[in-house]
Length: 187
Image (tube, rainbow, N blue to C red):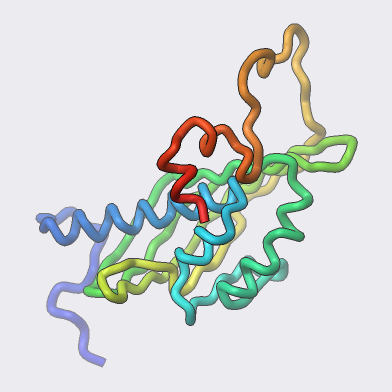
C-alpha cells in the first residue's frame, strides 16, 4: 500500500484550521467519555462509539459498544465513586482516520466495607473514524501501566466534605441540578 505524501507525524509542523478542529473534536470526545463513565450516563457513552466499534478492556471486557454499555452497570455497581482523568493526549490524524495515545488515571472507591481505593494508571490506545463529519471511537484499548489498591484513608479533624455538596455517580449529581444545559444534555 502506498504511503501518504505527508504521513501523520508528532514532529512540529504548521497546523491548518482543520488540524485544530480535528484535534479539539478528539479531545472533546475523550473528555465526554470520562464524564459519561463517572456520571454513569450510558446513553451518552453509547453515542461516542461507531456501531461497528470495539472496546477492549483486556480480560475484563472486549466487545461491541452495545455489549460494553450493557456490561458497565454491573461493573460500576462495585464503585461508590470514580474519577477518570485524561492527561497527555497525542493524536495522529490522516483524513477521516486518527489514532490516539491518551494517558489516564482512574480512581475508584469501593462500595463494600471496609472501603478501598483502587487507582489505575494507564493509556487508552484508540483508533477513531470521522463519519458524516463526526469523530467517534472505532477501536479503544486500555493498557495498564500501574495499579494501586489501598485502604481508604480518612484524615483527622473536621471532614473536608462538611457543608460541601458531595458528588454522586449518577443523574442525581450536582452537575445536573446546578447546570441546566448539562441536565438537558443527559441521555
